[in-house]
Image (cartoon, rainbow, N blue to C red; front, side):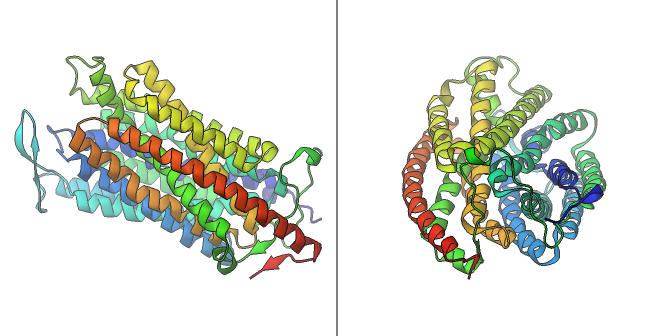
Length: 464
């Protein structure tokens, strides 16, 4: 076993991985920014226009994770994480520049006027397409570069029996970021313009992520992780066999995992990407916002609280779910979360007070955290860590599929229906399909694990 110390100590690298994710995860603060952009007295974007940057950032985040994972497999995680953080900062700053330049008059793009009840036709200010490209594409790719480099790096420093816990901790930093960014963004929007908010966030992300990324390094050649004392109680104890992406794509397990991941991720993206909007609609339906339906600062305050609270619960779901799956197995943990999420969706329409919304979003965030921890761990279990960056990057394209479809479904159904009832029912139906897929996945994994055991007995360590 190769001993390490100092700045290449596993704990130091793990902390750096968590902190890089904590710094670059600005996805869900878009829920606050879109409240400002939807304001008919200011920017007057439609729900679809305000949803486009979020859709694109999810798609390019997953694309960036695929590219970043491949690059870190070849060149190591440090420079990939460094480049990713700078891209996130640049995308945010460019969004601020585009808003500042194009926000002084009506947009010259087609469809630059939106009809608003009680106001008539009003011009759209700023550049929906420009910000979608800057925030959605450049920032999304940067987030993916960081995510795709720090997750495999963190896992390589620890024993296979801890994949769930370590993966949950690294991803927990990603979830916990909203606890910081939600109040910071809310304060910036309350005291500065939206273009200044973009700029300040961009500068901060670029500087802080650059510092933390310098400590994200792979273990030295020949490094063997320490074996935990309570190994006998772990669900996964065997060292995984390393598969390259071609061998992975030949397995039935991969496609069942991909389809299940896309379905369960869709629910969280639909809900968490629209927290402030859903809160407004639900509270208005419950009479809580009587006489204050267009108090945008009030909606930002509610959204800020919900985003921060859900981020804490989401983090707990990632860490607790990962740890639980190390003990009772990935599939059992996944099934528990899917059933809980389905029940939550069936009841969500009637969550029309602040406290019921807190409970509802807490359950959504908890389950979403579990989902996003299970699939990184399953990928490592089934296909190994040698090619993990690229392999999980391919698996993570399921998140891109979810990001491309889910937020658009929510926006379209809302504009047709005027509330989110149909959205919740669609989500519940998707969870029923996810249960069926998970049961099929369980059967396929049982068969595959027998094959992997035979390969280990034959001395096979890699498969191409």
